[in-house]
Length: 329
Image (tube, rainbow, N blue to C red; front, side, top):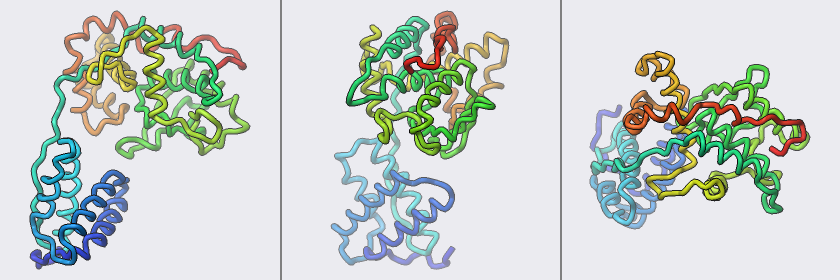
């Protein structure tokens, strides 16, 4: 660290320091994509308000404070990114910048929707009878596979949509997730039934699907997006007779993951396992940053645990129906 930590930052240096900061962070393996956008907004603010002058030490504080048209969560994210940037420039010998303390609100109203056996069966009945559409010629085949993957493996939709044919090893029935929330690879085992369904799905596309291309697409060459899946999910809920009760009550697509986690906990308890001994294993499987994130499932659903085990099983006998080579998946 430079001994002189009182050097001012000139407005003309901000862009360079932001670029260097991004390179520094990405060299450690971080993506820093949303953070790059934050830095761009900050650069624009500096150009508008500082011209060629030195930055005042409260420049970041003022910028975030004046962004009152942004949500509290967004401003909290801004503060987090700029705190890291301020530490970086301070280590280079520049003066310390003031950062506002903004805590992102934690919603206490959210309760995950845990799908019952009847609800999941209704969903499978619906997705297995999706009609082909000219606009989305492959949607009726990939949605049944995608939803079963989310439900049976507890994946995030962002992780599932980036799976390529190369990521799946049918010899070991394991998927390697390479694009995850925390940039940590994870191994996801497949049940025999799910492996069979996915093998048929990929086999029908072997001639047109590149090994390094995402396996879920709605039209050849056009990858399925989370937005399209969300919209389709709402339609499937309606067709399955499952009411959507609002943003905080769901059901949401992410509730497949919640259902997987809670059901797994119930199964572990039913088998006589100490939940807090097995929790770190489940936490690593789900790709959580730590055990505290996994404990959230216990706190949010503890009043329902006694009934869930009777109404949901991780793998329903008919989640994966018997299929033939030419089945519509």
